[in-house]
Image (cartoon, rainbow, N blue to C red):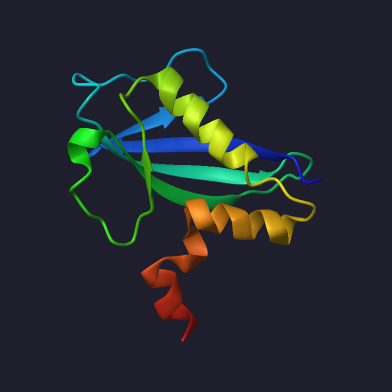
Length: 126
């Protein structure tokens, strides 16, 4: 079984960038926990490797459910807090652990937007 780890996490909120220590006990909070719409970039890789791949996801509360960003997958949380974000993210990543990295990558791609699947990367391959 490939055990996954989350490395660097960056949040973009109101055009501000926050670096998140996912192993920390505290992180950024927002003024209105019921009105969150945050873009995250996460580095995820095998726990025993010295490399990661980059994934993105939108985290939104129900007040923002109608907003659509076609290229990002969305994780819905009931109300924003650092602890809730951390719990949901770590559970989502752990749910993608499989017997091989390729299988884990496929599972991650079902929940997150992989950097190699972004429109700019797809264009550059042609």
